[in-house]
Image 1 (cartoon, rainbow, N blue to C red):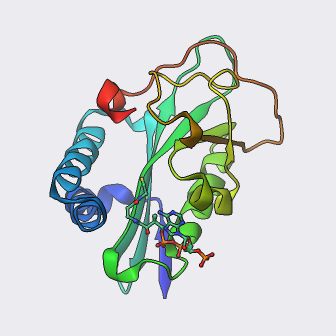
Image 2: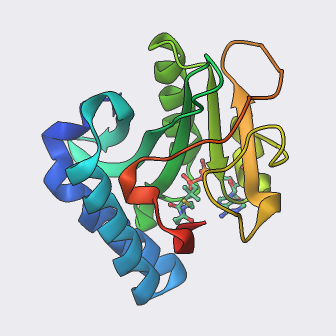
Length: 179
Ligand SMILES: CC(C)(COP(=O)(O)OP(=O)(O)OC[C@H]1O[C@@H](n2cnc3c(N)ncnc32)[C@H](O)[C@@H]1OP(=O)(O)O)[C@@H](O)C(=O)NCCC(=O)NCCS
């Protein structure tokens, strides 16, 4: 049975290793190390109010994790979170866990009063959970994007107007190479 939970802190020591292993298997060792280090940095340096993690557990074994961190738009009253990164354990991929995990996380954000979610990745996959391609004018990314077609967003409240002004991300994402 799949158990979805926001209590990511209870398993925080396992999370960098999960991301390292999953990304090493799909993108190579170097990317695995980089994403593992990013997750460690996110957990170490992000204020509690600016980070949400969702886990999928199967018989208490960690099967997947997604992290959401605050993207601040100082000129807009709406609260925006960035969904990144996402990992489903390699031997559990393509069984629907990723979509269940993401949908649960987005609903949790909505319940916490977050207005809009963005992510940066493959539109073909993230469209399955309601993300649509957005322009860099609709919602400014915190740094120039190397793959603008991967800039995706969705309203959690139904409001669809552009988000005003520049944005800034949490410290762990504040590196041009990640964008
Ligand atoms: C990408 C990932 C999170 C998807 O989770 P998952 O549990 O394997 O996917 P689901 O079972 O929910 O969804 C499967 C569907 O998505 C598609 N899909 C899976 N990964 C995809 C990808 N990278 N790009 C496009 N489509 C993808 C499958 O083809 C399948 O489509 P179908 O339902 O039409 O057959 C997971 O495979 C993973 O951790 N991959 C390695 C790390 C990664 O790339 N993370 C995302 C970038 S941050």
